[in-house]
Length: 463
Image (cartoon, rainbow, N blue to C red; front, side, top):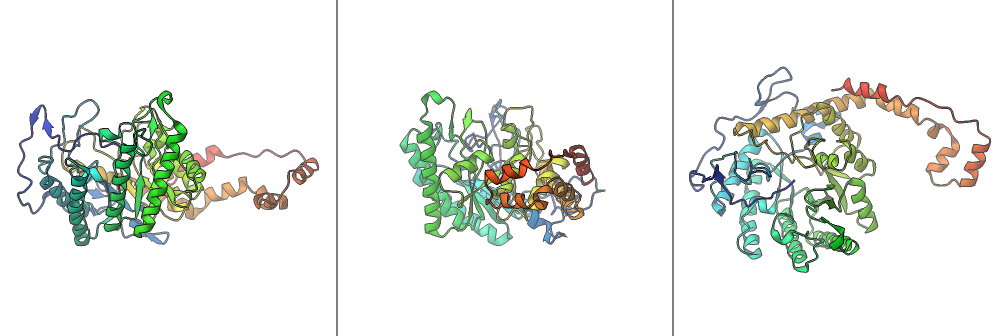
């Protein structure tokens, strides 16, 4: 998802916002909102959970450990909300969004952690530019990050909320108009490396569980001005340097790469899960990285919502999830909160079948619609997303426990477990000649039903 605007921009319908000073002490920023409670499926209270019970144990894990929910800073607290590509005039007016000063950024830390604790999430995520003003130089930006990360660390200790991941924004600043790791300008590449190094230091300081690399502009608008092979080699070298530095400082986080097919470039190098995984294997990085899947990006690549989750998990490479949704008939990233129980069930089924998502999580890379202007909408949207995924988790666990889908799959592939030569093939010990000999003496293969319609209806039983 993008962070396209200058966080200091703060306008309402063509006039400067009149807001109270960020320096003014406040005991609560959401005084009308209490800690969100579970009320059950029959509740009509929009500020209550209907399915999510964090400490309920299901298939041996607490629900909070299956889900590992996180709030994204850039869609919630960076002062830019309520804008869209057709207007940079904000509709989400927050009393704490005063200006682009350090005071305002520090106040947002207090706002965020009150939100996290009242909502009841265990994790949060951010880009460097989300939490600290960039200032007039790289040195000033890094100094600002030191101040902000000190306060973030203090609030983590105070509340118990943890950092799922932090990362570097290498796509919003004009210096990265042609990419960072793949930029034709070495100085831009160098600035990207410096931001990355700093955020690895910050991630270690804040004990992040993962570190996500999203190559927002690593791609091209036209191949006519692009040395594709050189750019891909430079990106691989950049990632290898990041791995080396991570090991040097003893940072234990899982590295992940987030695929996206297009936007903002016409072609992104990290097109989809299989493209990224192939790139990692090509450059010997398959043991250092997994993938962070955003389903809205998956649909931009022309796949079903849960496709990249499934493919990454099947290859042992699913590291984390940016759990959002988009409109399949639109060609851009809309970053909506998940609200489709069937899609959430299929997504959480993949998580359950691989035994969990840790050290990754489900980060709500989601933003309120520009028309949703009430402060309580911040809570309502996250509650809805958490409930939808929790509902999906409950259904997925029941599906696995009842075993009807597993039974159908085992029946469909039974010849691979009952034929001696098939086992030899799976072990990589068979030759083409002996398989030909087997085929020549074997009757014509029998056809059997794939049971697609049965399985599609079966899924509905668990929604």
